[in-house]
Length: 439
Image (cartoon, rainbow, N blue to C red; front, side):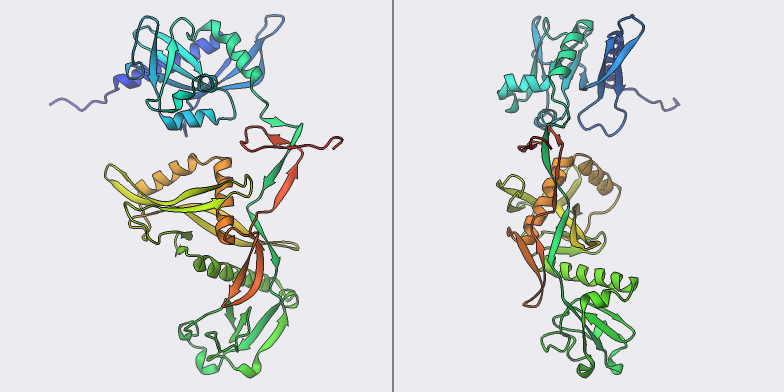
């Protein structure tokens, strides 16, 4: 009986050969080749351009980087002729490379020619806008696009033409994930719970339950507990209700700072549930699922505070990959934050995966998919998630109320706090703010 053996696929050998060839050629240019060994979602490595020293002793690293996506083998060479060929790519890859903040080149190892060919992706898309429509492919000329030692001047020119990643000539508006609480609760009500009602206190409550902290036989809450509209009216001694200024209440010690966070987080929770978000305790997520079905995704229209652009966003959708079937939801977590005199709601965009639109999808496959999805989420995408949830929480308004029943007890901004920076990241797709002269 033959022992089992490990097989190295022909395609894998071709891939290694292509990457090894790139490394040899780059080193022959006296430049640096760095292969990306993990978290590769469309980039295989990078070239750092070096300039030769005037005395011929070594080279000077320039800090100029070109990102590289490489493909090897006959499956990436189609319509092959003596003059050229095409290489199939995906639409996602093209948009990903086009949006990269550094130059990106696409290199193909042609096994029959035993040669490498390359394209500056961004220049190719500028010159061939039709490349973004199916079928998606990049065309190569065998005479003009060979990647060898003679490609060095073109690579250097490509880096010189690329804008600096950080510009000190123009400023930029930076967005935080914080929604300022512009009007705070003014009072805290403290009420004794009737002795016969203290055991199993929470289970005795029914109806509208305001945010509260219960300790030592007393409830601390942000609205009058003797109000007959609340669940507290039947369990407290109305004659012992005390009304305290919020700042005086907080000043009693650190314990009350913690209690304040509990009250405010409960108030925010009520607001999120009130705008139609479902809630999952573990992991803590707020997400849309009303009306969701396999053939009926959920979309929400929103307006970006950064661009003023209104557009639909898919917030829940069914996916099927082989045997895996699940729903993916854009989700939210939050936290009340206090920085000195600043009170704010911190927005934490998340993803939620469910089996049926309600129950969490768990297991190794779910964790792996979640990690892959978050790896693809870059700065602009994460910022858009923050702005989207700010818009949802505020209903598209500049500010929104946090209510107990019909009573507004606090008001928060619907637009995240910003800061003006004296620099900007030039890859951002939004207009930058010119820096005033003399500053």
